Length: 277
Length: 250
Image 1 (spheres, rainbow over the protein chains, first blue to last red):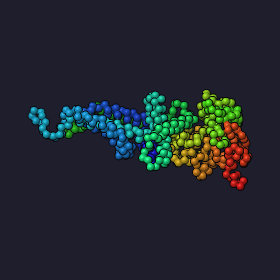
Image 2 (cartoon, rainbow over the protein chains, first blue to last red):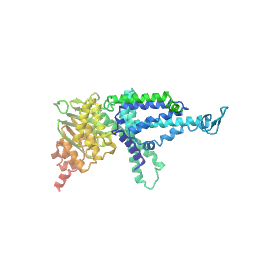
Image 3 (cartoon, rainbow over the protein chains, first blue to last red):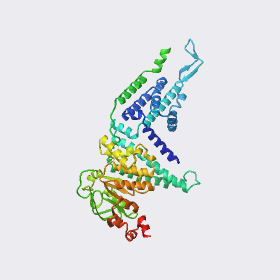
């Protein structure tokens, strides 16, 4: 199977996850979209030196992965390209921000100086915090897309009055990813079958191949659009049938909202630590 | 089906069409079709079969002559209304199926026409039942076989409960069993059908009337059995007898 086919299969596997009969999958899409948004805002708005606050936010992805029966390893594998980028964000902080913020172990002298132990600089703390922010945001997004179809997400976006044109563009991009992928796969297969000894595509063939790919994809995209028009599509896409909000949706939303508020505005780790000191 | 229609479901008079700066693809086409009729449009490659179907659903509008579908002239203002009565099955099912699952694709039309959820569900159930693909409801479109895709494509238009079904080369890429299945399905469907195909055996099995196109003109219009037995007529216009008649000749 070609790389492109593998990529298409990966997208298809995400769609399979979205269709599973899990409790989370049946939640109202607006609830899931809003919670993801609020979670990400809560996480990214925490001070970069407040690592302890960040740690407790791991509860949301941990809880959702279990509730939706998602495989954590699988999620990490799927996000293997984006996670390193996210983690690289704060990598230079330890170099530029060397003020010591805390010591692990060692003794405090009478003059207030620390002797021995491991000194942790503010740069290290901020690097870890930034990394966690990125990882949490990616995981929360993964939870959303693994439990909610693109149509449902767009439906929720329309409920939030996101402009129709923007939602439509997102939907059509999603449609045309398959079309572009399938056309690219066909062209690559046809090329490889007639150039069996070559590794990759010869640079002289790139021009015509890309040209063919774009023309064919545009042609197919137009036909798909015609097919949509013939079944009543006139710009006001109705996505999925209107979904009613149930009591469980409201309760789920309110509980997480309260949890996020507590995590964001109090330091749960410090409070818990205070109980034992 | 929809409101009682007394006149011809389809009325075509002196219809001509040409693509921009090109020779006419269709010339002086005259066809009247009534409810329940099943018509095969046959002809060699490039005679205008697909163009004719595209005109009938309003994908091409700048034609000359008269074209009335469900008693409405095919003009831009009427296109949406007319399309509610017509189901068009594309030659390539990949162009027809664009939603994630079969069930969602079949529901696309009814949802877009603003039908209530109960009615959408009823129509989806009925369309899947008619095409015998209830088991594919939640299957991802990407994972369907060629035959399944064709049946799913037909289900997507049956859920719109059309008065007219247009099909472009429906038997292409079907194995014998799926082909037989499709023939039985089409013969059981009540709406008027127009089937554009090279597969004359398929046309013979599904249509009671045949229109032979050649270089954009209608050469013959009559009972399927009569036209498809006329070896001289078919061969002089680039076609051959259906296989069953071909062997009878030998």
